Image (cartoon, helix red, strand yellow):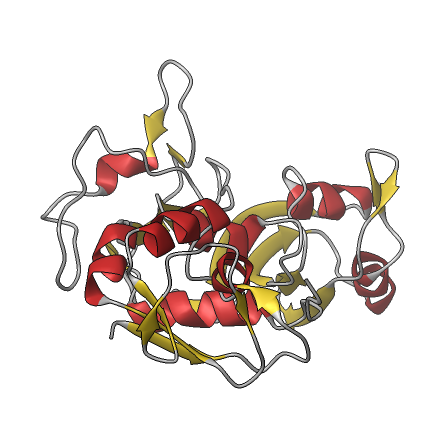
Length: 261
């Protein structure tokens, strides 16, 4: 079997909902897999998407199910000067960097016509870790409304960094009339700051710094949840590993409440 889990909840839950909450696929994808006999409960194929899983039951997916759910997820170290999403005239999209010459490690080079939207944008004048993915489960884990994943940034600023300014950046600022969530902000000395955020407002860090009289001169994203940029060189890319995908999903769903339906 390609995927295996034992349901540890307190009450029965519909099989398609369990698969979706486990980060395996969407409910619609689960329905299709079940209809094709690719999902098993305690070793027996299930053909009814409404079937409930009770505590202690094992759920397995056949290898064919994993093949049907396969999708591209790319980790790119984006340089300054590339846009992460759909470019305006004269702008260069980050997907142009996804060539065989810039690839690190195994895996196919995505076809030029494959849709690989950014999973969390990174501004043209910012650099660092950019996820591009056709995997809806990965997207939901990173930018879904219930996601609790944090993102880490290294920032260089111009201006005097004081303890009072750092405290302001951590809590108490507003953008567009709405209070920002508390942020992790750490003074690393010599105009260098580390930011850890759980939200991603438009150009948030730059605008936060503007509010306290600092000007951002370099911004690099180094981490999204458990996935790190590490030593991937600027302008290079690699495929997200299965372990990284699983870790993203686990980290984003750990805070979800148990379901009783």
